[in-house]
Image (cartoon, rainbow, N blue to C red):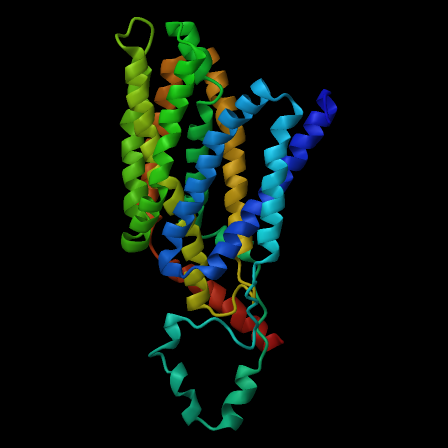
Length: 359
């Protein structure tokens, strides 16, 4: 119905708000129904589905607009929303309670299972003490491991979205290539996201550090070599195709394991400090932060690449992206894939204990 700019801006604002809510709560729901050791692969399938939608949406939308008209574009979207609402009503939500906390591996072999040998009069008052949960943000935002996942997601989404605003005009200005060439290049960048379940499975099996570090190692030379594809280069389209495909592989190797890493950080904190995030956990807050980082990267990327290309040129732009990935590789190697640090774990446990005693 909107044909003027203010209505279109309001519609896009509401669309972005709904996307943020659905994606955050959807990932939190995924963590509720998938076991921790398989969360990477599950997030990989989710990322693959999202990439498929982003890949096919513009193509199908363009065809509907071309052959059907303006309003026909929205009919499939309305249909998908109706199906999604039906599926949402069919979801059976698991609601954990404080009285029946989720079992953790730390409860086995630590003496907790032998509590039945102690007199009930000695144990009941201690177990009945309410635990005051900590604010998830105060715990996570001081964790170097979580900050690496957060900043890494921002960097990767900045790089992935950064090509949206510069690739098509660059190949047109420098090589006089057509829109079909630009579409093929974007396809080369997006297709490797079908490998997301593989990278998620690798993260489940070996930890997030190796696929994430491998992705950044692939991204660094690929981005730096893009600066050599300039006017006068032989076969520029083929070279861009290969290099952007390599960048897409790097994104597929890194984005999913970083999301799985954020989920596992929460799981491990809760295992070491039961009740630290309350009865409902902190998955919604975690993926809210990750979604914010993704959105910030998607906003910052095109602005950064557009301005740098205009002021300093394509070569400087691609070189700077490679340098950012090189710098990001250092904290990935230091913190990614580990466990919550001893200081953070003790701080969380101490805070919960103090609040319990006060209560």
